[in-house]
View 1 (cartoon, rainbow over the protein chains, first blue to last red):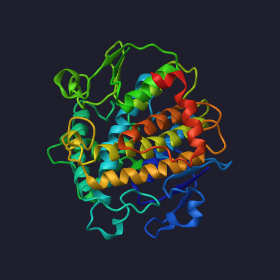
View 2: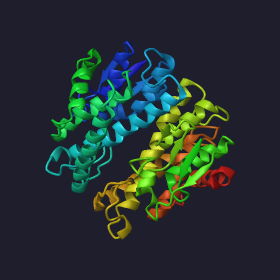
View 3: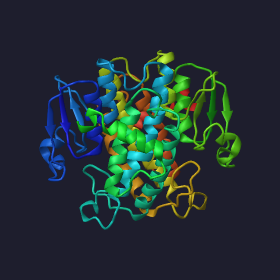
View 4: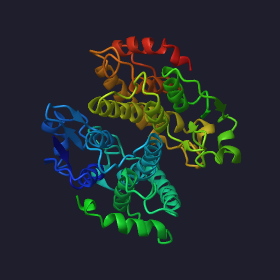
Length: 211
Length: 211
């Protein structure tokens, strides 16, 4: 296997933390998105959409979505389980993972990429190859959605160690990466969200957070 | 089990087609989103976000995301498989399902909900309870993303009966629902996309498409 990575980008980080929690060593190929390497022919022949991460199997099969990569790895390396161990748990994790992704990751991306004062992103409203102009209103929508994200996260963490209970899962990984990504849009965990702050310190201290 | 449904909405339809393809009969509770029933206390006690569909198990456990509902049903009723049968196939289906969802379903939603001339949606840029204003630029982004969606869909269908090969899967379900949803934003399959048109007629003729 080979992992096309970008050390500064939030989605590759989700997969890297997942891989580290599984205790796997997968050779990495770093792609420099700041220098535009993801939009050049060499990488576009790997992923025509110019997006990261990509997991490549030894037979050349490629997966170009973070959750597909994680599900594949969970299927072939079930321990420790990060996506649930029963049908109910798997569905609950899918529900919450998606909340963390839509209200956290995507909202941060909207807030960060649609700041029309940030010239590097004037035509990068969506990641990847297509020149879509930044949209002012979408930056605002991103900030409002992040408020909701933090509201719900605090609620989920009120009575439990991790977001879905006593076990660290993919939901925690996506939430952690979303929070660190939100900092790029200058948003931090609200000071009154004490359960979230307690959880954030704990998950950030895991060795995988440095992966 | 109980399925909170809305017969006109595109996401509940994805789950209904999935349920029909599995040959399951699950009692439905219709929620009238046009009349705002999803935003009233009774339904908010089922799903505080006001979103549909929701699957409720007999013990009260609820799943409020279409893909979580489908994954749960696939886990307990594996036949016929709609999410893949091997780790590689499952990951490939996850990758393409997400393309159909983001480039198709979400783009249609962006194009439809952010038409600032449509008064019913002036403060419904996102589905659910929160009054987020429609965003003009996002309607355009939705239309551009739909162009990409149709481009890639035609590419995937060039050499195969269904989007992922010879078997009908969740990828076809999401793509079909996205295409019918795009009509609400007055977008149709481009006339030159002959493979997509052939596939669309075929999947629309399956009994499940009427579910």
